[in-house]
Image 1 (cartoon, rainbow, N blue to C red):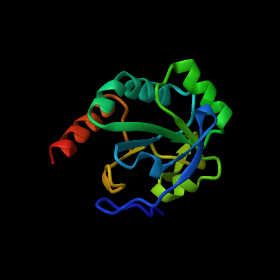
Image 2: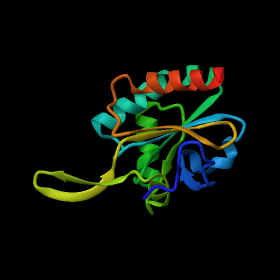
Image 3: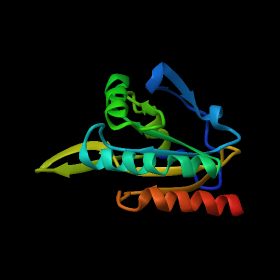
Length: 158
């Protein structure tokens, strides 16, 4: 169950990330933050989503926003994924699912008659003060990164 609510501050978190770093939400205070969750590193939809955010990364930064991607993959898998695709932002490893639980992105899925729990592709826009301003759940990749950038611009205009 999600512990985040639009219009409310997001509790600080700390996750291992690519580049051998530990990333905290509090590191991004003073910037808008786009946090997107994807099901699995190095899969087609997740690759396309990361590439779309990478393509617009400079525009996000110009608008005062940073980007973080997150999945349940380990740091090594995230590092390989980021390096292979040339992503320009950190990827977080959430193997213990604490971040997934905080944002309520784990959903039961059925594929080929088998039921499992996986990440529902979701994106969250957190403002400069750490308050959740928008959330997108059940994301479809085409056009999504631009939609999030448009929301960042709208947030900047107030």
